[in-house]
Length: 249
Image (cartoon, rainbow, N blue to C red):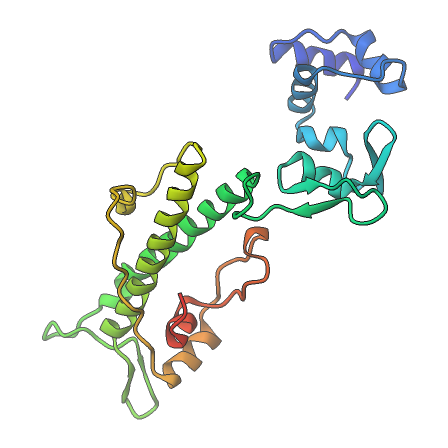
């Protein structure tokens, strides 16, 4: 994209950044930009603002503060609110911010998203029509049978396990939202099935049903686990049914 095209796109976004100014930024004759200019330039270039300041993937280090060079990845994490900038310049430049840290606003919202995603996955599985298939007499068919036709896992047992874990996650979410409220943070919206999450009445999650060992082995081998994100780093990405059998939320 030429400087002229970039100037035109900035103007279309509502801020005039003349072509000579852009040329001066490119060749270093103008060393600074305002926050508003940075955001408009990022939008015009379709690049996250943090990557204009710290070009991740293109530089090993970035001067993020006057005279302070640091790994570009650390610079991006700090700008994104994922990490705290440390005073010690000789060792680690940043440290992760976890939800229990008073400054960990981004981490709290990451955790909220993860819990909502896990709850929706479990609630969705519990409502899958394939679990509710019935025979001609109206009796629910089992989810799993062995080679001899013996029921390994009934539909009711599997549904109870999924619902139990969904209840545990809902309670974790309620506690997280309580913490966010204590820190005067805006609460994100929740799905319709969790509309009473902020009622002030703690939920009583049912204990997830333990699945038979044979059913656990089949399910863990055949059902894919959820995609693991950075916010769940360190946690095993395994199917909810496997967790149910272990009795872990």
